[in-house]
Length: 251
Image (cartoon, rainbow, N blue to C red; front, side, top):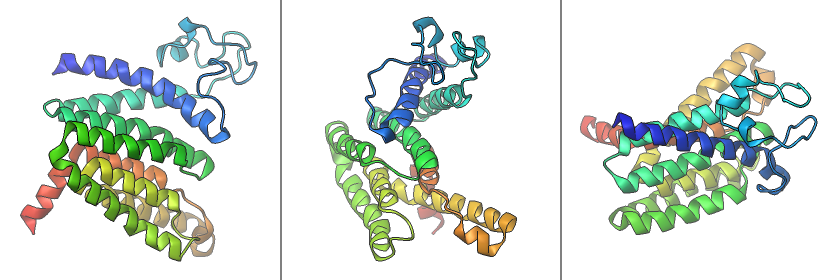
């Protein structure tokens, strides 16, 4: 098992580097392939040896080799977090190939979705749509016996947030509803604890904001729900089935 985590970490670092590009370029409808990675300040193309995830940023002390301008620490943080998440998924699901693949793919979508929602308050269809398609294709191919449950969970979860969003457009957005549906397509019944975790984290954050800013100002503060759904999705991937069984056993 420890040896299996090494390629998971390495792969996660590489994927995390690409997810930084997705989070930066996709909202602006820029190409994800061209131009090649470059300094955001001087636009000098980054050499391959300066584009090693995490390590290059540390060796360069967070600055561009050409212009010495600071490069955001967010880049290595996203790379390291993606690597850690990939390793965690492999550690939990190494004995279940279908759950392993579905978990890795879901995490790879949740990272840029959370970042984009934090930055732009949107959850792009260009991420949720391919995520949904991949969930159906991979689920059917790798675990056909569990596909009905996942389809039902996806439809139920999407409708559970979609209907309130249609009735009250000023509340939770349709992007959140679509993302919840995507979580159901990957997690099946484990979408329930995933959403509960997201709702709990969102509520705690809302209470903290109100406590800091006051009721009137706090209620006007827009807080994206996508990052909470992403965190809930990670919990669902790593411990969702166990939480469902714990609930069923207790009640």
